[in-house]
Image 1 (cartoon, rainbow over the protein chains, first blue to last red):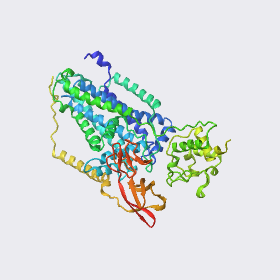
Image 2 (tube, each protein chain N blue to C red):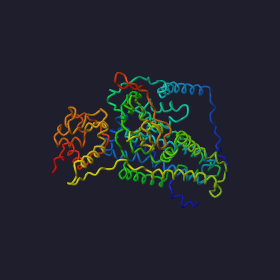
Image 3 (cartoon, each protein chain N blue to C red):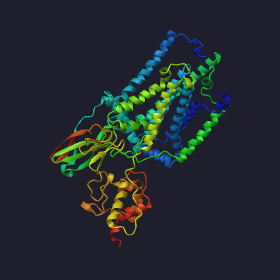
Length: 441
Length: 155
């Protein structure tokens, strides 16, 4: 391996830790704005990313730190493995580094469960569901994880504590141990005159790494702006499951396998990832040969390569097999020749689109509403005032466009959809409830 | 090439009696904090939910053949969480089904004549029996009764 070529390449392990450090830094600031309850989490995150100066950037960078640190640490592991660096005398560094990789995955996993939207809520339920599939102690494990019999703020508090206290402490301990081990290896190797590529470059921090770190920070900013993390509707414990219930990318492979293997939840969701992680950490002891040249380690490289390829294919397959969304954006451009029946159909689609009928009974339909919100009625059934008569048209539009803004007046503090209706959709709702469409000639 | 790196022979100070004592005391202090901490973390294991009959309103609200969503209150930590269950009426018999998918615990929703889970596309029949997808267990059922023309469910 020529020194001129490798000298320009940055130390990927150092870069992974540098990005993790940026994650700790940005995360520390996020904590100033985060409310760790199931009810408030989403609103606090929405406030941060929509109203706080620089908040969206901060949250976006923190979000991307997770994925980028995992990718960098994974690439570093592959590179070390390719060069045989996991073998003695590097085995201790391999174990510490592998443990750090899993701590980084832990950060990203717990992080995705915190925003308090439907996706995070579903993720919390699945986490408890997988834990519950454990033989004998499943019920207890799920109860301890949830902090109660169902998913609630108690679980959010627990996951939050793991995310901001347990994992950072673990990361700190492991990084200190790794740095000490690298120094020990470097001094031992140079004393014995056996300095190899890995012990020399162990956690190097040169101008190259510094320049790359600055470049990665720029990438984080770019990603935060171009691909900001999503924030769905607020978690609703009373509601039906959300259709956009996909986990983070590094869980897609296991999510797909869970879907394909009914009745084997514990085997697929618990034993398999545990065994893979264990094998990864214990790699130096599973292949005991001392040979380092890749050409002479075909079996070892083949097994690891095939496993990595299988995980990658499953991930790609899962990404490709995204089920089509159940609801399409209803057509709202309405021609003049539309019949009242066709118009009612479109209006019902808009009402469905914004899930008004989840809480409100619409037109006395027994399949709508759950008794937590006043009815919306065109006709005025059973002493219910006609919805069109309660407000002026102007106020109707304002209120329907942003119900929570008028909570003081209406008592409505929650909308299932965070998106607001378009002016065309507002037109439809206004014409529907004021029954303009019936008189049109 | 393969010389083990334990070259720098560690000359660690031998643990003295005083050193042992101070470490033991520190460990004891740590344990005293850890004990209640472990207790608090495992607390959900020490409390069991008491089953009781819950009133779900007049029986007339649930038409024969209908499937309807009701909210019941579950305790979790310091909160009371409203959780949906489904009631299905077959004449005088009322089926109370949990809304928690038996695959991985996502929430199912009533869709036409079945219950669908959005997470892994599992589906159950109107009676909560596995229909499609990765589900193998039926939806959990609760005991119901009609008392003085009101529906009650026990959980």
